[in-house]
Amino acid sequence: QTLESGHFQWSAPSNIALVKYWGKKDNQIPANPSVSFTLNNCKTITKLAFDKKSISTALDVTNEFSFDLLFEGKPKEDFKPKIQKFFERIEIYLPFLKDYHFTIDTQNTFPHSSGIASSASGMAALAMNLMSLEKALNPTMTEDYFYQKASLLARLGSGSACRSVKGQVVVWGNQANIEGSSDLFGVEFPYTIHENFKNYQDTILLVDKGEKQVSSTVGHELMHNHPFAERRFAQAHENLDQLIAIFENGNLEEFIKIVESEALTLHAMMMTSMPYFILMKPNTLEIINRIWKFRTETQIPVCFTLDAGANVHVLYPNKDKESVLQFIKDELVGYCQNGQYLCDEIGNGATQL
Ligand code: PMV
Image (cartoon, rainbow, N blue to C red; front, side):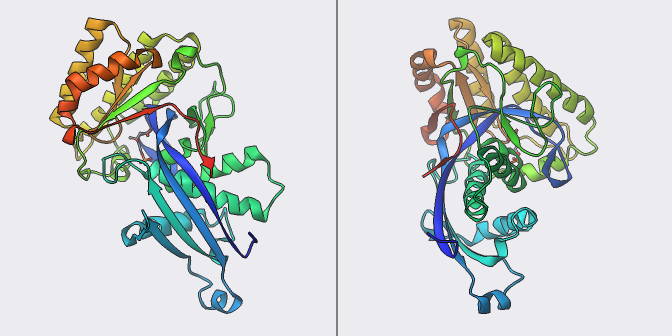
């Protein structure tokens, strides 16, 4: 491998927010801080091959980005505008981008069009690869700088992607009492995490695999002039504050209150924007009600969260895995499209392959 040509390969996981990011300012600066569990199994694996343009081609196309995109081994034209836009945004941070031709070869470990957003894992995996090239060009950079800048680049691809670089709990956005937190990149939660959260489980119930009627880009925009925006942004700070204490004391009852309230608040913001919209489906609500009933009957601390879609993330401690999986099979699978669900758990972030 030389700086003329070669390749890198990284995998990056998806993540699920506990305190939600919904609303942003220019340059992908979040309107409020968020915190997420990094996942372990739902990942994107991306290989980035690079070839330095020869002087003659460089002169010809010096003002163009040059890349091919393969998804699961096949050319994928419809992802290209998103990558083009990403390159435009990050060029000031990676001035070498136009010197190379890239082949981006990418695949997900989760089923295509399962309704699981691959933008977080996908943008994080691409950002890691680009940072590997940046490091090859500037070998003295520290590991901290490498990960911080990778997260910053990922943020410019898709906001929540900046939380997929590291594990296991990641904070993105300025929060006065979280040391090192920043609007520019995600950081590992810097304080104690109680062992109740060790190997925390996330079973993702695939309720609806269709295209969303409203993209998250549009959803974020609708938080401008939203009647409840200011209160919501303040609430996210308060909830994150409470989670700091909960991560330390392991109080799952309090954890559940915050997490479920955050999920419903996210959807409440959608329902109260103008135009208003609903991303939950009838089966989303059926599942939520079943979870509440099961929790009351068994006292098992299982809860749900949602992202910008109809799928339900079922969160529970590792020690309750057997009972909750049985409950899911007996009572919830019927509400999933084609009976599909994915078993995941908290994980460690991006890895170089
Ligand atoms: O990263 P985006 O722009 O796709 O926004 C995603 C926002 C939510 O998934 C709904 C919440 C979050 O914090 O991940």
